[in-house]
Image (cartoon, rainbow, N blue to C red; front, side):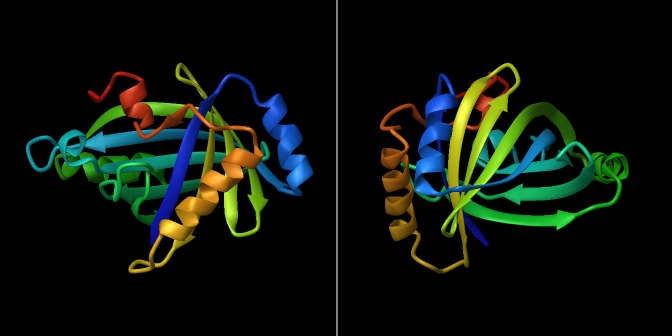
Length: 183
């Protein structure tokens, strides 16, 4: 799967929420996410290869929990965070982390965020308050590998314009924004 994604830094969500309502976007869920990122510089340094490996613990609507192991490939263009993404559900984040550590991976950092997710047509729009980093709006669409993602990317920027967001776009990862990985 390819995740076509663009994120933008915003100071406040109030205007964005008003515009989402005008567009007819549907609020889907509220989540708390804690992502633990792993790296193995001796094998392949993800900071240099622009890849990511994480275990995400999510609490959805204050009740349901979900644990996902995710690999993200390098970014595929110069304007977005579009990349290959492979995910699998796991039952035990502690043991999944221990498996990775026994393979030589080391925890690099934790990223915590409060996320509100909306759907609009075939797009997912999230409002993320990332602890110790800031507030971000992310718009994404999932596509099959081999599909041309340029039209989806154009549509994402059109949605941003409708939301009143025309600057503040950010390609750096949250790890880079936190100073864990260098820019």
